[in-house]
Image: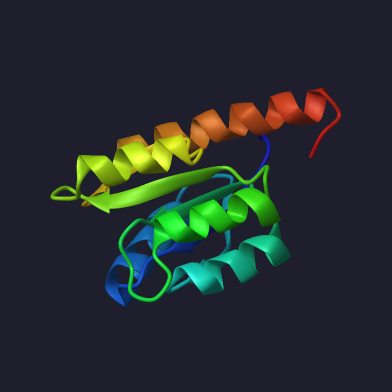
Amino acid sequence: MDEKITVVAVDDSQIVLSHLTRLLSEMEGVEVVGTAKDGLEAIRIVNEAKPDLVLMDIVMPGMDGLTALRTLRSTAPNARVAMVSSVGGSSTRAEEAFRLGAIQVIGKPFDVAQLDALVTSERAEKKARISKGAR
């Protein structure tokens, strides 16, 4: 088995968060190590759990995903973050997410093949980091 990928999932909708967590948990070699309902909670959990991957909703009440991503760039600069956006989401927000260092923007409803491709890519990224001597 390849490297296990640890993930933190962030979404303000409990239904969406449960669905995403279930999809990820059903993938071989993926462990969901935390969930959060807003950006502030996400920052705390990411800094504690140090996951391989964060899947974070862009639009949330309180601290949104873009603000949380901005903050993570200083508190956890190596965090690998993929943003989640509804299909009707603004392309300007997606562009901003990429400018802030998001590795991908994934649409809702979730495409299992797209999630699987992201996890596979992150597994390869983690393997490359380990072979270079980094976490």
